[in-house]
Image 1 (cartoon, helix red, strand yellow):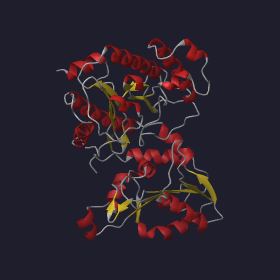
Image 2: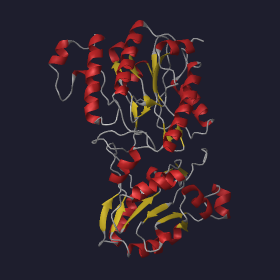
Image 3: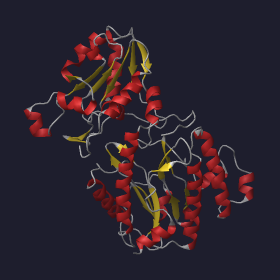
Image 4: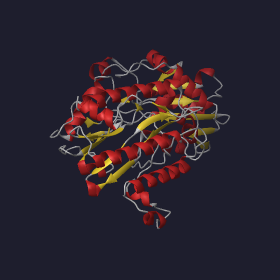
Length: 430
């Protein structure tokens, strides 16, 4: 891995939090992701399932974690199963986790080879009454591919039909949503890498440059700072491309007078950052561009101040909508009649700001975390309002990542990344 090893104390804490919420005489199983094929002998780069990583730190394929707090044999209360390595694998694929290294990474004393899983698991299931299965219940999930976890669940239900079944996901949604200090530090590192990439761009962007060249500059800066690369598919959208919310072609040329919206950020140690900045291609905002930009920035700042313990996510978005409506009236994009006659199911402001303002961020860019209960300290959210005006040939979005504090306004992990019009123009024209 490119990142420095994470102290296993983080994963020990995470497992304790999970096991504290398990029912008596219950067992929980977590599987790594598959390596997904492209065609022929080509595969996609491996990405570890974030749940097993969160609970063990094991960043390797063909890995299984078993948690059984009430196991009769104490050594079987936490077990990590890893792929058995050998000289052949080491030569062709590189070093894999030995049992000793697996313990060092995870803090789990009992490590078996994966070939022992069926026998050990059957024995443990004779003691357990309930099994926690790890289904994907994220509110944005739309997965069609059968995963390694899916196959395990089908097999387990067939082999052990008399056991009660419980869900791991509700526990994970609660505990993953509130970050430990070590996690916030890792996210800060990802944000710092993102900052380096963005500052590099301010001296690179000029009329005539291509969107993919900007993407390449970022990738170089991210990887040279120990990131695998982008935390999500990068959006580098100049001119009217910015009005396509998930524009990822990045194949347009940046023209004099255009703005360029860049929703691009680095990962570090599987933790995401999520940044959006909109800058003028020629280094100077027009008066109208500046007017709209500052309106978006005011919405972002007011929305950020609302992210405090006790805030309800759905109500927060309604309040942000009211702030945005006021700004759109000031910009002449809406008039009073638009607001008076709006459909409550689709408020007038949605014509120009059609997406949400905030989501959890962490091991996933759209991370796990409770959304129907009050926000808590140490939850980390994006704040990303935007105004999109196809008729004027540009769209503007601004986004930072913030940590909710016990008291006061959130801590901005991206506080050092240029955001004010004057600073951006000064750096681009330096």
